[in-house]
Structure formats: C-alpha cells, structure tokens
Image (cartoon, rainbow, N blue to C red):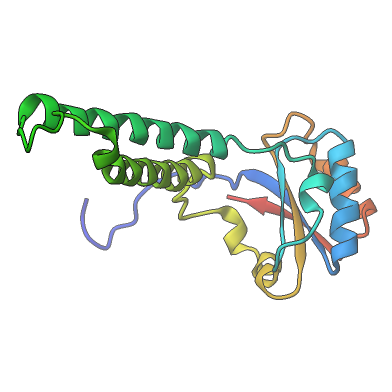
Length: 188
C-alpha cells in the first residue's frame, strides 16, 4: 500500500444495537420499567443519575449470586489457611517448644482469619467484575447526545436489539407510548 492512496475497503452499514428512551423523572422511569418488564423484554436496562429506590423491583431483577461467590472465597480461604498452618507447623517445619503440641488451632487463628478475609475480598471484587462484564471500555450508547445527560438529569431505558422480542417498529412504539421525551435508535 502506498501512503496517501485511498484503500478500497467496503463501507459497512451501521448495525442497530438498541433503542433508547429518555425520561425526565423518577416516577416516569419506574412506570416505564414496569411496562417494559410486563411486555416480556429480557435484554434491557435503565440508566439513572442517582440510585432509584424500587428500580430493581420495577425491572424484575433477580438476586445476584455474588454473596455465594464471596462465601465460597471465604470458605476456601479458611480451609486453605488451616491447611497452610497445619502443613508448615506440624509437617514441613516441626518445632518443639516447651512440650507444646506441633499444631495448635488457637495459635493459628490469625492466619486462618486473614486468609478467609483475603479470599472473600478477592471473590467479591473479581466476582463483581465478572458478573458485570467489566472492564467494558466501549458502548455504542456513549455516542448518543441524549445518553450524555444521564449523569445529570435524565433517566434512560435501553432495550437491546438482541432481545428475542425486539422489533424496531413495535419496540419504538412501546417506548413512545410510555411517555418518553425522546426515543432514539442506537447504532454501532
């Protein structure tokens, strides 16, 4: 390829990835969320400038498995710390001090506690990152002017095009009927 020469790459047509609807109040986003949930959509989300009490119930969000991941990390840390303390004190480096036993649980509680807390914290951090699919550095929503106000004073419902019920016309009509200020197509 010669510098300065145009390349003959075919231009790809933008792909519709979602429909976005803007709302201006907490009550309107809660009502819209309930109606989108009741319509049967499964791949959709809301974006708000602050936490909205009751939005999880309005969206029908099920409880997360994150507490179980943290519990699993804590139990693994507890058993791992216990095994480490036993192995180092009673097997690998036995040291007899004043006739005390080779392994004593009370003397090793701090190590066991610390490994429990460490692996539970790792479970919480990496579980949260994995469940939220983070880090995710790009989203086509970031290009929309209406979405930029979601950090200030707007509330947004986004229905993904990958949803089984998604139909450009019907989904747009549903979002318009919810009292949205603006309904936009999100293309990538």
